Length: 373
Ligand code: SF4
Image 1 (cartoon, rainbow, N blue to C red):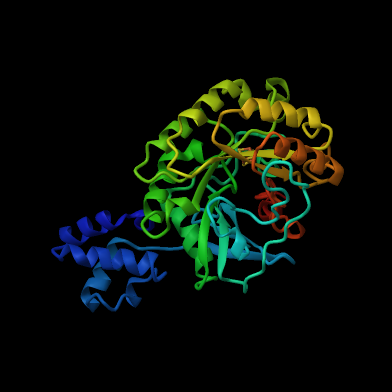
Image 2: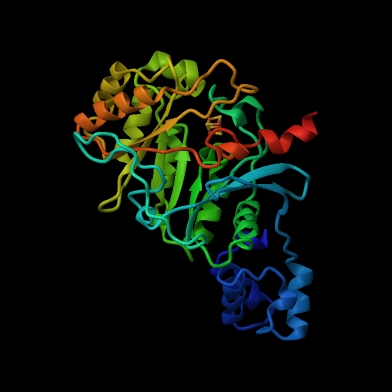
């Protein structure tokens, strides 16, 4: 798929066509630096070469079929792939204070030990300056985390490397002046589509620092190991969600195949560049995993690991997740304070765009609904 070609791939193609290698690099730059996905518009190539490339390597971006904007500025995009499968990507603007790799998301609530978990509002920057794009890696998800709408709606197919890159380019086209960070936290489990995600990462890291790319997993040790072996290692986020095996099995059945101990061992072995930490994600669910005792256990579980903890209050969804409720504000505060007391860096991520169902764990449903009905 031409959208997933690296500069070297394009150089080889150019040489095979009897052209100098730099023509290949020009094509890569046109696509990935200038967002040009039509050979016709690559006027640095001769008219005849444009036609040859067009015939040999036709490129098509996923079609944006729906945009749902939220009051906070995030936009959920529904994109249609060439086989009519629908995926979703979420654009999330963010403030200047969130630009560092250490702080990926808005709504940091508590930082550092002992701090009262009062809401910290990031300073606002003009919209469109910096943003995070949440990408999908599959058209559904077979992992079946119980609190996740995507999981509820079942397995889908893997996205190709070109479809993953195309998803990014299609949304970037709508925000051409925005500097994007990427998170693989949309539909699907990236580690179950590792080859294609890795190919997309090879392309992304040519124009985006790996420090600004995060791959999130439900906890597949082999995938974590392979991610750490990439030439350019992105940030890693792991959904922990419960500090004891039994609770985690209940809300994340994948725990039976990959127990917490294995996941933690893979996290420990992950090769972290200096000053980077793994994000331990924890979806907080009322009455399931949100007590102070749970926070104490989580602190003990993660002791010694280079992590920051990202607490994500569950987004309620009466239709797909009627049995789960979001935690109270008091429970969130107490949970965060306990972890802060244990000297963890904790942020609370308010999932962006709940009013358009663009929040964490809420992808796929709405775009796919009309089809299902
Ligand atoms: S949380 Fe992620 S891994 Fe779990 S079911 Fe949802 S999409 Fe799949």
